Amino acid sequence: ETVLTQSPGTLSLSPGERATLSCRASQSVSTSYLAWYQQKPGQAPRLLISGASSRATGIPDRFSASGSGTDFTLTISRLEAEDFAVYYCQQYGRTFGQGTKLEIK
Amino acid sequence: QLQLQASGPGLVKPSETLSLTCSVSGGSTGNTSYYWGWIRQPPGKGLEWIGTVYYSGSTYYNPSLKSRVTISVDTSKNQFSLKLTSVTAADTAVYYCARRMQVVGGLDVWGQGTTVTVSS
Image (cartoon, each protein chain N blue to C red):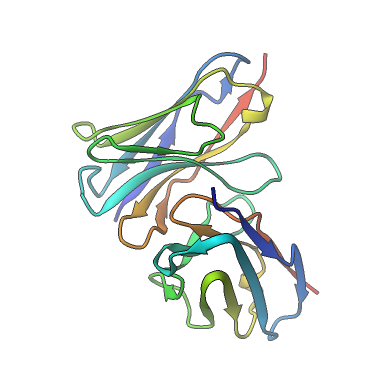
C-alpha cells in the first residue's frame, strides 16, 4: 500500500508570500492519479488539483502543482487570506497524506 | 448541480454496525464516468479513505478496514451505502461521501459530512 508523506506539517507564512507544499509517495504514483485538496474548519474538503497538475473548476490560477514519480508539489503563488487552511494530497482516489496546515504568520 | 447527502444514525453503540447512506441528486450513480466513495475524519485528525464502489457493484476497500466494511450501490434509488461492523470509539468521526472521477481519480464532489459517535 502506498504511503503519502506531506511536509512540512505546519507552514507559517504571511499573505502575499509564496507557499510550497510537498507530498512524497513511498512508491511511484501515476501522475494521472495524484490529487490535492483544501479543507477549512467545519467544511468538507475541496478538490484543487487532479491529474497532478490540472486545476479543478473554479480554482484560481495562483494554485499550481507539479511532480512525478514519488515527489509532488503544490504551490500557491501569492497567498490570500482565504488560502490559510489544511491541504491534503491523495493518490488514486484512495490514500491521503496526513496534511499540511498552512497558517498565518 | 450534483449534490451528495449522507444520512444515518449519529450515535452507534460499541460492537454494533454503523450504517450510512449517501443520496445523490442532480446526477446518476449509474454514470460510468464516476466511482462513489466514503471517507472519514476523526476529530482533530486527517482524512482516511474507507472505500469506493462503481455502478457495477465493484468495490475497493482500505486494507486496514476491509474486514469490517461493506459498500454497496443502488442505482435504482440513486444512492450508495456504507456498513462498518464491530465499531469502537476509534470509529468516531465525520463521515463524508464523495464522487470520484474515473479518469483522474480526484474526488470532485463531496457531501457535507455526517458525524457519527460510537458510545454506549
